[in-house]
Image 1 (cartoon, rainbow, N blue to C red):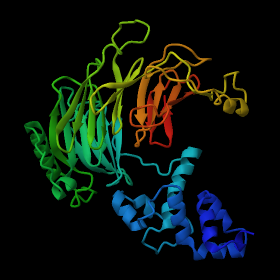
Image 2 (image 1 turned 180 degrees about the vertical axis):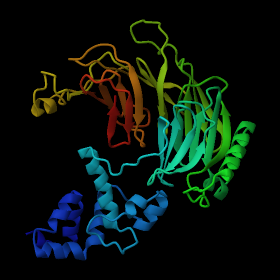
Image 3 (image 1 turned 45 degrees about the horizontal axis):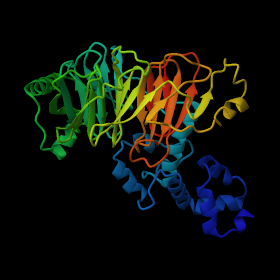
Image 4 (image 1 turned 180 degrees about the horizontal axis):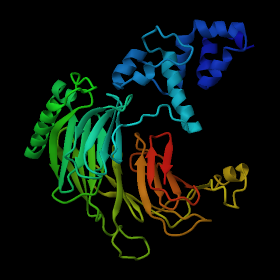
Length: 444
């Protein structure tokens, strides 16, 4: 019956199937395999467009050039594929995207890299353009390593122990444990496209000179340095005038917050410009029960339009446009949806009960304040982190007491009602959160 449909209809149907179902389609009959093989590029391009992993007005080479991603992992051939073909095809592009998706579901790693060095790594960032892992260390220093081999590409030992670093679009940022924030930039980017704001301070210039001298003394290096891959040079030093303890950089904006919940600074990094100094609303910096104990900032995040300040007992959300509070997130009233996946919880003995728990009625949110409370698991909760999707319409927060909150809508400019889901993960404490807009990963 399917093969009797017009060819263009067949291709549209195949585009809407999961990629693994498309593979199985080939095995149904010889005619199916013939249809697949004769339209293989069109089929995978339609799949990429339908699943929104590629725009409909660009070819595969334009997509790869536009993303400027280090695609060595994509060039690796799967078992049974033609190893003589050099170009990346639509088939390869789609297969590897869904392989990543499958690994998320199965909990498997696409690639494991063992980084060299005996020091304990603290903060790790990934440079997808140059294929390197950037790390700070418990004993001090920062380094970039080849993502494929783990070999060192660049090292700066003159960085404070346990430094928090941020990285995006070639800019590498860390603090000096004072009011100074160092901004370095990929060396090849600054030389190819020098920015007018380039103005390192004397400390950065001296550090860069020292690193250049040390590199010149290295002998028998195993890394070819002529391409400047993984190397950085100082760009600017920002001065917040008061110490900050939390930072988040999503190009082009860097957001810094003081630990005492007084100020948030929003910088335009490429232009080295302070866009806004937000004075946090102290009337809202309470636990909602009249407790005057001082709050502290655990994390800070931002979207294109808002800044999220994660404190111990609440999350304050402020507009970048005028610095005013848009919403306050606390734990005192029930959520819209409730999901517990704790296997020890007697209320949720099987999968049907767990799914049924999500069908709670929506409740209106008043006064732009979210107040949450789990029915079965009450008690004081300390927020640890918050992350927002690239589009700014979805954000996720975690509490130390194994609660995950997923929020959509409700903010100015989103034009959608606010909905809230609370997930209980059991008795393990949570400290780390990652969210890319599609997947939520937590660790304790």
